[in-house]
Length: 79
Image (cartoon, rainbow, N blue to C red; front, side, top):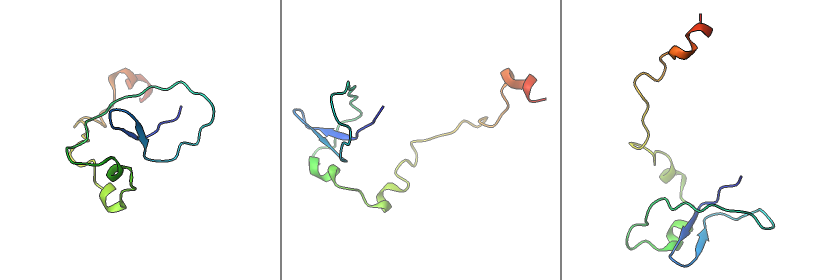
């Protein structure tokens, strides 16, 4: 399995990195979210600076308060 990051403009897909697979492949296309108004396809196809990438998921990821709590299903194996 190989994932490709691309932008769809309603007619074509613009990949954000080179595709290195050869030959025919079955693909599944998943539309994630609409692009903001006024953003050109080439703006997102450019490599983002590292300072933009670090912390870009802040507020989007969470962890349950009981994440480290032992699971009841595995209790007999942990004694």
